Length: 228
Image (tube, rainbow, N blue to C red; front, side):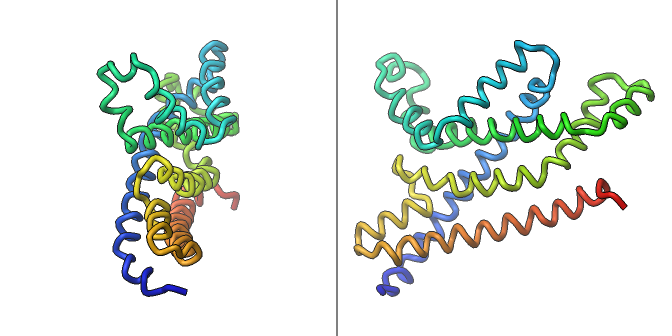
């Protein structure tokens, strides 16, 4: 085993870990901001709104994220109208295309997670809010969304872990994240086992940190909802 090459390139792995973390945070924050209003629309009794959101989530949950990334990064670039448009500087950027893919993908999954949590709210909570004279907006802001987001934490934590692992796909569009660094080291030193097992250890460590953070969040925000 060529451990000397791994030790020598540890700073590069750390740089790749920073890139992976940035991709993850940007995707999750924008994806969550997208998912919350879409989840509300998904649960409304207005069929055309609900079905429009369902179509978006169905497409992005029903196709592989790698295919979505290829379509956005390579597919759109083949059209002349895109190359001549004002959006071309964005869509010619691997970073933007990767983030856009991850945002749309995690937004679709998170929308269904939050929508399911909204539907599972006890009917008594809604009736109690109505009996206090709360408007629909006040009830949504003070009762429905806070309780739904709390209940969605366990499922959302799984989505965050899946997205962390999914960011490895960014390496196929030349982004030097952890997997991209591992591929480059393997191409340079021809040490696939050492290069990728080191990448796996980085992902495993980041996963442990995220799991620990979500366990703490669940203890804090889910504890009041637990039966006594």
